[in-house]
Length: 158
Image (cartoon, rainbow, N blue to C red; front, side):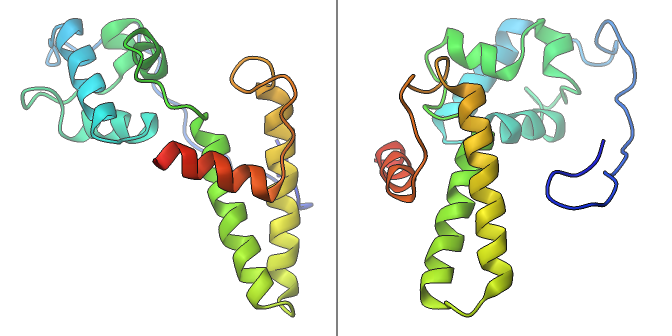
């Protein structure tokens, strides 16, 4: 698949190995994994960071290569069940943080055309993602603007 804002090809990566059940050496109880996921979320980790921590550190010293195989649930589903889900989806939040950083940089450095373009591309991605999440994760009448992004991220941190 091509990249969104260039004429170059996309990067191809390796696929995850096909597996229907977790490896034998990773025999941790699903409840223990869920407890660890909620614990990491309460410490302020995002779902992708939780997956990496479980892969690297594991539960009780045993690594968890794939949470979905071990528990039959995704990390975000586990967080939803325990009311620990973040207010904004992780990808949208990261793009908003980037847009805020870029906007502040462009305000200080008006001559920086590359970052003006990067800001336009980032805000375009945010609008595209917002239309995807509108109604489910976001309010039905949500529209992106710099001020709205700042308010959302400040409210989330408070």
